[in-house]
Amino acid sequence: MNLPHAKIIESKLREYPKSTLFVTYCAGPHCNGAARGSARLARLGYAVKLMAGGMTGWIEEGFELERL
Image (cartoon, rainbow, N blue to C red):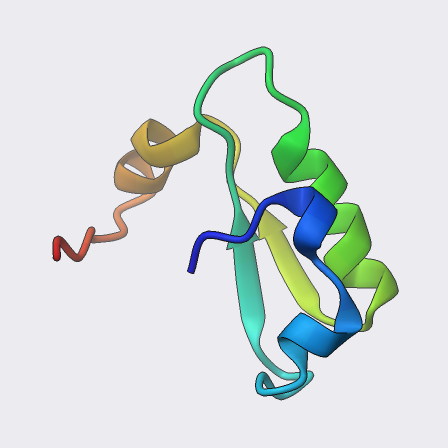
């Protein structure tokens, strides 16, 4: 799900149980959207992992990508 940090609000997240783990990431090294998104999600009571390194970091940690 692509949800810009400014649009992370409680009404958009109601369908997700509080046990949902959200992973936030940015496209580039100078972006702070992932950190802002993580902070918003945490304030709303969700578990969050800030993916340092974006998609490259995701792959380096051994996670797979799903392509649509």
